[in-house]
Length: 413
Image 1 (cartoon, rainbow, N blue to C red):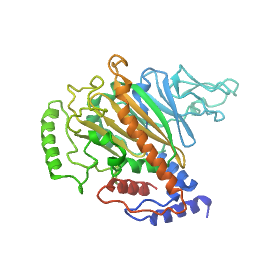
Image 2: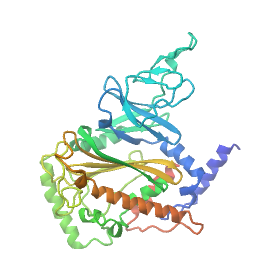
Image 3: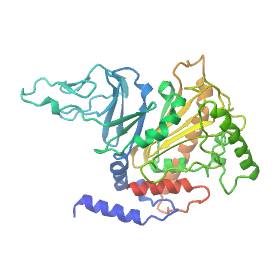
Image 4: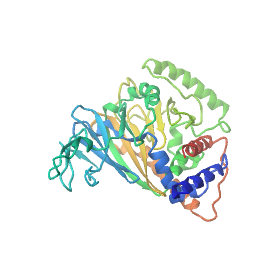
């Protein structure tokens, strides 16, 4: 039996031993075996959100990132199409672009000056023998999709079908105008926690009442079926009916009309993504500190009473979009107990800082909420590292989506 077969058998036995409605054993959050398995079976097989089309508006504009040991480059070509490649030279493997972002006419290897165009074709390899077949030495392409301004990549040799995601999400995303936006602010956090702990935190609001004083003022999903008062249920129902009429005039649809979080993720080919539009609390038209609109309306919106549009896709993105701004969080694992989270604030492409919006009013709501979560995730990782840690039970009333995430994860493994 090979070492890889032994590892696969060990993972299979560990997965089978996981209890339903319980947190995962320690090794899933802290072992090299499971970190490598996560990279191979999840991060290299699923669609990953990597960035935004507005980050590379002109031909030659690019950005780079790294997934595990794989450096990647995303670039706009001369036909205005977004392409992605492994960011390594086909000569001896040198990383081609070392900057996080930039603009270039050609991709030139800094080592031996091999030259590629924006479609990955090898243009020049001076010093090599004449009989070399340059047609077979272009940059290695990666499957790429532009979903209404959101760029997704898939590193698998045979990527999963993206059409279901496009069909179900694009129509709801279009009015937000993400493809007609600009980045107002982006912050990269190195969170000292396994990426799964960050998702588990995201998939429940059991912790919200104590830890997110700003968030709970703006939203209803910190309530669940065990603690939603009848008067609140009636209120949400009445507001939903009114919103259906108002939003219908803008061609929008309310798709989550209850307290508690929408169900996600699910099994099946379309279980890795979800999108819904839902209500904000009374007095809130935007997820800001005082609930007021703080920037020009985005996209196709005609007024600010559009609730909040929420999108999520495992393994690495969630998004909260208000009438005037959009906030996205992108996860990339750095190692078994560290995750880079990039939080991005978007506004309309014509909005000018200092004139149309102020960062001091735009970012605090999600900056505070995000950083509160990162602290909780880091504390969870420290506790799980303890020799005394044992998997604990989930609340069926409040942690149903954590259980769904764990089931999705174990199935992917």
